[in-house]
Length: 66
Image 1 (cartoon, rainbow, N blue to C red):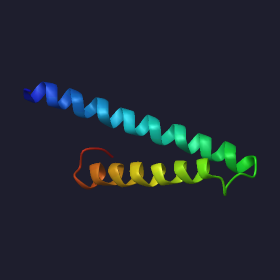
Image 2: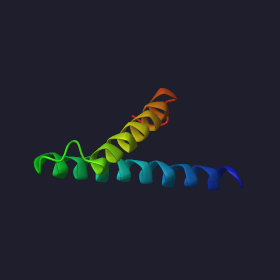
Image 3: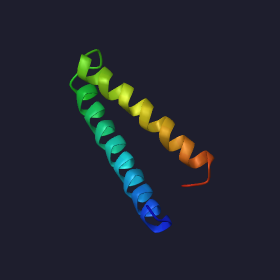
Image 4: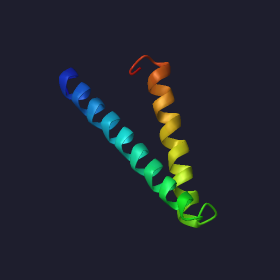
């Protein structure tokens, strides 16, 4: 894999993580509005959200995104 392909793959991965994080945040808001903060689904979204946040924080720490 050359440098250009690596950069393209990175950008695609970053966009995917950002999209997933936003999707799960919306789902969590919907579940919260329905009073389902204690559901297994809500907790799974919350765990995923924390994972995505950690990944995005690492990208920021390395100066790969703002």
